[in-house]
Image (tube, rainbow, N blue to C red; front, side, top):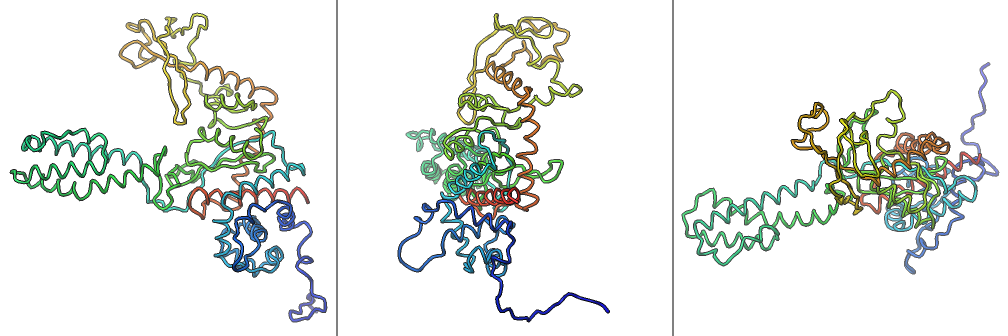
Length: 509
């Protein structure tokens, strides 16, 4: 006879099991519950008003969100369903059933300005338990797409060109009017065109229209004046608003003004397209996120300083050691890390190529291959000719950092047999060098090639980079659900909390 295990779906139980009995002792939901019970949420409670209808407890909603992100459930509607159907969520919420509006309002409004404090408390608990060390961190960044429409873009360069076009056409109209009606415009000045103030432009167009009112004007000019009167002041107001939103950026999305268009890596070859996104920076230790920041600038170079400043604001100190890839290797960053006594294992652009014996080296006539005489402060070209110092220039970066660039000029390049390969200038070759950057790169090279540097270099790819792989591939989190810089910070904070508690649950078993 065929034998089957007993199956009695309608069997009554005299002592039904509790949810606690049905959940495994080492299940991650228990870690989420235990850790959040330990943190101080009094600042979060203070955001609630007294009186009125009773609210769901913020501790319960926080547990629900964090465990939801741990289970790859980011939608408020899916979390609402889980709180009614999943025994882990039902145990965690104590059978409370908040609807999706309540969950979303708590995430978007109540956690504002609080998620970073909560995250910091959890990290400090993990430091106490020995899961993580804040003195050694590995830093890297990735771009995560915004939920904005991909085709509603505004470009700073396009605004600049449009304003230049309006200026040019307005000057043409003004000059044309002066030829036909110089008497009417004799007391006015065209300096307003440089400022492009909407009101002044509107006034100028009115003056042009009045001056040409009884003059023999072509139909084309009349059409241009009508178009200018109707559209230019309105357009200039729009450009002013766009420039206010842009600030130092070169683009933004109309449906999420905080998002900047960045080139996304869509496949293993790095092919992709420009999409509205945020530059997410994290620092890790043992694949646990110790700190995170969200930036609107696509370049990693400019994010390190604010990232470290926020690290200090959160924990009260800087880490002793920081390891990062060549994307962070700039003079400003090296200087900043040195001033704050952070041992920096940060590569610069050509470091990896320098280490490969058969790798492609710098071009033969590159400035770094020229001999420098420190005593005489001069370089020698490939033909042995002296290149004399001709002065310094100050180069200011977009962050306001000032670099001192020293300039050197060859004495005579005419008749040199290798001139065509050496440089393309019509006159003598001039090179520009930052001696401070070369000094900092030398120090970085020594640190990176030391025994400790080799350990950190080999560990960095297996510490910080897998975290992004887990978030994007394992958790399927490739696009934010919320819009705006503040809400994106909340969402990534919940994701970082979920990642850390999952790691904690794995290592505790």
